[in-house]
Length: 178
Image 1 (cartoon, helix red, strand yellow):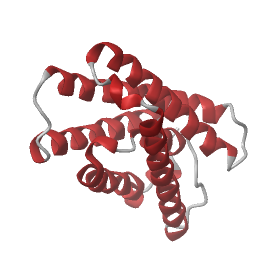
Image 2 (image 1 turned 45 degrees about the horizontal axis):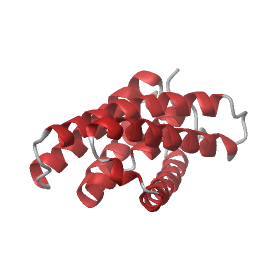
Image 3 (image 1 turned 90 degrees about the vertical axis):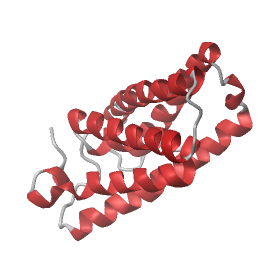
């Protein structure tokens, strides 16, 4: 199943918008990039193959910005954590797809279910990795709350962007996949 915005020659608008958001977000936020929000949006708006490609590209840009521009350390903990982020984001997207698919057709419940499912999965999986790969101190209630707010704001902002794009391109499907 492909999304409505991916069926025509000008249909790269949505993935290109998410790609631009990836670059901006990586430069602005580095370690607090909204991967759970991206996982949920990919699940809600893209077919599985496109979602995986977009998540991998977003992860690659984020890691490149972190290691090459922001001087992340080239040590086992940082590299391992980066790899764990990719895996957890891919899994979180599938969990978001499942949650949205089982949340009915309500246009408010589906995206909320997808975001909550993606966020919880992402945090639990990364915390699991951190228990042996290091960085468990980054999972305090205060930090998780800040990350949740960040992801929720990005998710809402990108949904607004998606809404604008669907209107500007004459499409009527705000959320299609899942």
